[in-house]
Image (cartoon, rainbow, N blue to C red):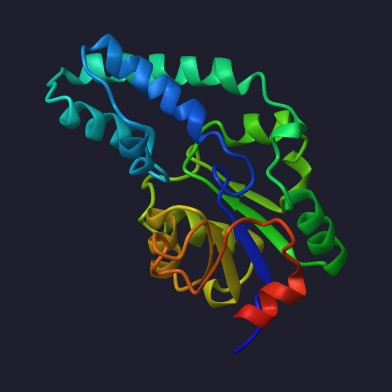
Length: 217
């Protein structure tokens, strides 16, 4: 099997962990509507767009609102989230990321970010990684969120490589499905019992090298 020519990375849970910020903001919104959401429920929102997440939360709380009110709530949630994100620094980069990216750059492997977040560039700027990607595909460039493959197919297109030559790093079930539907191989970042469809699963990027990645495929 040919070795990948490009690495595509999800943002949340792979490069940084902003899931706690999303949870805090969504929970604050749910509480304002008179109900609560658990961390376990929030796990199911990973890789899901803001609009879709809002719909899932409202269904969970059995709350029905007008489209105008939904738009207001989505904006409010994002403002609360951005307040937390604005405090991020390079110290928020997850273990192993900096070392792996240095090796990737030295090896000349192309990289792309594939995130449904509309705040991806803001986060990358806060952690000083905006220039570490050859292409950045975020929620502002796509019409459909994961598990639709659009985000990763656009990444391959912008990098000028075939989907079959791409390797995707993902921590979410929806993200793994999106990569699979795009015809790409996958590295799951997390636990094998959750990321059952990933080709290979590592607990994190800590200690991960290009050689270890290639030998695992």
